Length: 201
Ligand SMILES: C[S@@+](CC[C@H](N)C(=O)[O-])C[C@H]1O[C@@H](n2cnc3c(N)ncnc32)[C@H](O)[C@@H]1O
Image (cartoon, rainbow, N blue to C red; front, top):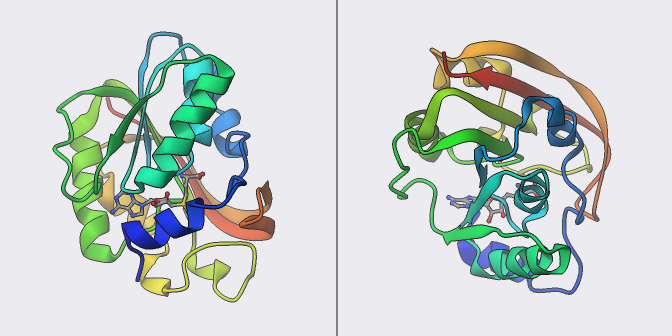
């Protein structure tokens, strides 16, 4: 079972589990971002994506239930000379601020079905008009691969889940397929993912 303590233990070592560089899919969305946008990096762990969003001039917040991960995120932001807000909270219980963000980055966050529904409802509430939801996550085709992802298949994403949880958002991109990951020690090799770029009308 995934718990905040288990993630604290994973993050307690010296390195960065998923690297310090931003996720490549997120990096590829740079053309959609503008300085001053309010961005939330969901389940941001050690902060690689929140810090990169801050470096693009966005007002970035990282949320994660691992206090250890977010401590490293703040240290990374300080090293890079950018401001990063951090929220230590369970995304299924957090009071997501209505229309509080122009960009929500949901990168490799895999939750049990009931929790996923709660967190997605929160993200829907928090996305401002015109706001972007940027999601990358492992799909069932990832089962058996050693390039990352949850052991419990119930936590995996799929295009159909994206369509269900984020119904009402405009689809700008929604793809399932294979990508080569090179993100720290935990995401290495060919992987099966869904990638989504969705916009609130
Ligand atoms: C696979 S890691 C990805 C970290 C980061 N998004 C990245 O790509 O580098 C998943 C993250 O989700 C966080 N997480 C899982 N369940 C959570 C929950 N219910 N509330 C808050 N964070 C959660 C974990 O602590 C972990 O940092």
